[in-house]
Image (cartoon, rainbow, N blue to C red):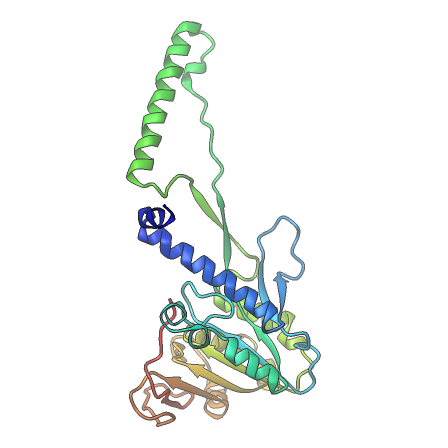
Length: 294
């Protein structure tokens, strides 16, 4: 019977359900297997306002030597994930950040895992009650009752039609954005200001995939002097940043050439230089075709 119910669920809903299960499971692994703490943001959030969170190791802010910061790409991926497709079709080691985190911890790094796609919460849109014209006090009660009955029947038929036409649209939803974390770029800057900038580590290292690379470049543009002062090196993987479109200045481009490297999808052997028209960091082959975020 349970198998039959699964087949009756629309593919889109089944996929969403699977994504929620994966995300919940990865969050549990981050806390239980990697010993990371879930930290709510904004740090000064009220009880009623929308919130997001990041994950940090116990020593993320106190480790005096080194700190590793991980940023995933765009899409449906959440904290601790690189690509859902790899998680589903390959394994957790391929599709999540868990191997990176465990190795970083084993080698003495503090760790901060960003969650740049958790930008809003969805709540049911409040219903607007429109006063019926049949409430007119000078109308006979019998006539008002007849109008109300017709109105209710009409609404009932319309709601049934809407549900039949689009079964998923039973509730009208609205998005409430998380303060100062309404986009991946905002999130990266917020975590920098409230956590990374306060960390004791002498050397901070970033690993950023796809849109995470764009978020890092935006962070550099907004906090150039601070980033240069704290960040030692940046490993990008298939980064989609663009120094021209993002208007990164000459000093940022020069710093990226010295301190960043972008491993990109390529059939060439690992670390083979790959030509680029952008005057920023070196691009080298990842030795494989990297999976985009889904």
